[in-house]
Length: 320
Image 1 (cartoon, one colour):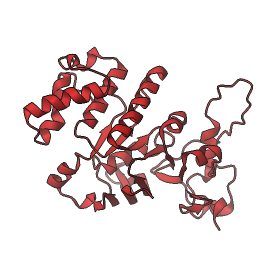
Image 2 (tube, one colour; image 1 turned 135 degrees about the vertical axis):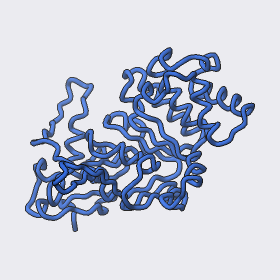
Image 3 (cartoon, helix red, strand yellow; image 1 turned 180 degrees about the horizontal axis):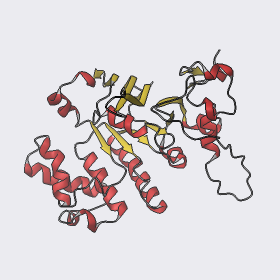
Image 4 (tube, one colour; image 1 turned 90 degrees about the vertical axis):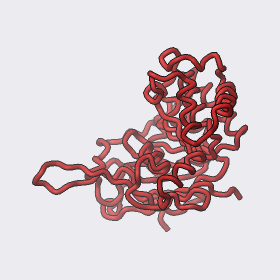
C-alpha cells in the first residue's frame, strides 16, 4: 500500500465580495470541504469546468493562497501551522508549474537569472548553482546555450520546459501542475506530457495534475478527482472512472470527449441551464438544477462524499 504524501482534510477557501457600503458582505466559496489524499509517486488528476475551484485548490495546498480553514498534511505535518521561515524550507519539496509559461517568466531576466532565483532563495552557492542549472536544463531538453536568452526568444513549448526546469530545480517531492499544456499546440502537448512522465520516473515525483482536458488526464493520471462548484463529487481510479462514471456530472463530462473513429457513435449528455454562481449556490446538491436524475432529496440535502462500489462519490443515487 502506497504511503500518502499529501492529505487534504476539509479544506475551505472563501473570498470576500462586497456589493456596497450599506450592504452586508457576501462570500464566494471557491473551495468547499475538500478531502483527498495523494500517494507518493502517483499522479492525481483534478478535472472540472472552468471556475470549479481547481486552480484555487492547488494554490491553497501550496499556501500561495491562504485557505480559510481545514488541514493540509504533507509528510505527516500540518503545514497550515507553519510560520514563514519553516514554510520557506518546506517549499523545496513542493513546487508548481503554471498554465501560461510566458506570463510566469520575467521578460526582463535571462533564463539563467530566472532559474537561479529558487536556488538563491534557498542559499545554494554560486558554483553549485551553475552546475545544477545546466544539469536541469539538459534534463528538460534544452542546453546551456539557452541561458543567456530571454523568454520571448523561445517557443511556447520551450518556455514550458523552462517552467518545468524551474519547478524541478530544488528536486521537490510534489509538483502541482496547473493546466501545464492547455496553452500549447496539440503536437507539443504530447512532448510535454511525455517529459513529465519521464521526470516522474527519474526523480520519483508525485503530481497533482490540474486540467479541464479529460483526454490529457486520461493519458497521465493514476486517479482522478472531479470537482464541481468547489467540491469533489467523485474520486476513482482512472480506468474505473473513464469506463464507468457514476456521478451524473462526470457522465456528462466524459460524454463530451471527441471520438476519433467516425464510425463509432456516442450519445452526448447535454446539460441544461448555466453553471450556478459560486456566491449563491443552490441548496442541497449543487448540481441538482442541471441534473437529469434529480430527486426531491437532492433539492434539500447535500450529499456526502462516501464510498460506493470501490470509489468515492457524492450523489444521493448511491447512498445506502
